[in-house]
Image 1 (tube, rainbow, N blue to C red):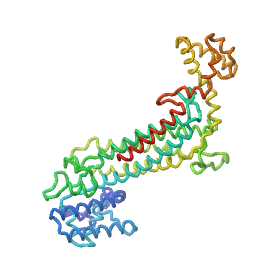
Image 2 (cartoon, one colour):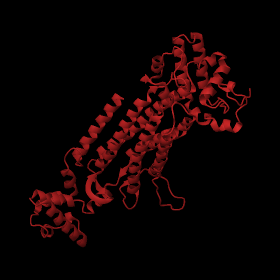
Image 3 (cartoon, helix red, strand yellow):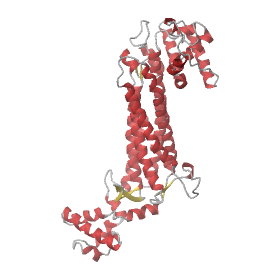
Image 4 (cartoon, rainbow, N blue to C red):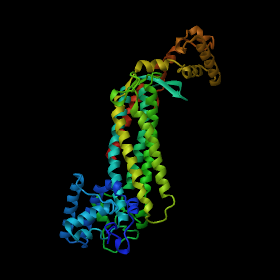
Length: 467
């Protein structure tokens, strides 16, 4: 039989696979990334087969030793990957058979490439989720600490990108942190559904061999074996769930990136990013470009694309396994890499943000950001809110004409709009008074920001313990 035909299934065929078709259908160029997980699963499978008497202890040991040697070859870059062997599974099995003889062919007893690849992907996803979780934790920790340090740094809060009310920089950072806290929960929840073992489902119906799937699941650290063999080999919704998490996370990071890009501009001048997170221009020597947040913002669309690709891949597949599922790996791998790299970039960058406090304060002072405070003051004095709104609107119009902020007007100037206004009004028209007045849970008062930061620390610590 021609070497162009895969030895695992070629017996039924009368001619070798066309060379182009072999390249077109092969996945080894990208699924070799699963080699470590494939070997991990095979070692557990061989261990279980020996326990139930399908393999002898000597056969088990030969297989495990051979697989360990192959792992070393792969890590050293000495392994010869073959396209005619199609995928990572058959490449490793063929090499094992070369090393230990016919015993290597016994490894595949009681399993199929269908449940094998499903197991490999879940092991891979579990490993990558754990790495991503570390980076997400690191980002949240850095964000919380920066928020605590900047609990009293005043900046304008915006709606419609128009100055609305003064807030603190720490309060704004904790808004980011709340987004990430929800993402963190989604990631850990996703991991629960990833950590279910398909191995033992075989091609689609299970196997006649006396396997013990609970043993294999325990050896591989899975919470449990899957309940249904048809679903086990064809399910990819855990990958879709991960890319859904990834899309929401990148949407949040993109929103943060947009603000960082705006804030570093000369028009805002709110923050400075260290040079190591920026680049310059080849023609304009004065430029300092916020490339890291811009690139994170740009990568968001590619992760959205991976989510749509996986949803579309699965939408019309009948049970059980179909070759379509070979197309799940490249978008999933890229989504994993993109999320991990974006989180690492942010975890390194965010704690190094340097707020330009004077610029932030001056921007908050402009734009009549304490107008709502004046309205609230009038309401507390007995003025109906709608009337107070009208009075403040007139005072703002006067300020625009005279180029004066509300806090810069004299008492006489303010009283021309309402006799109710007294000297104590200036206690609420200052930026410090405005933020301090929001002194409730979720508010921007500095003591509330510090308390919120402490609660966030405690919640993150509890999440790590439970995980």
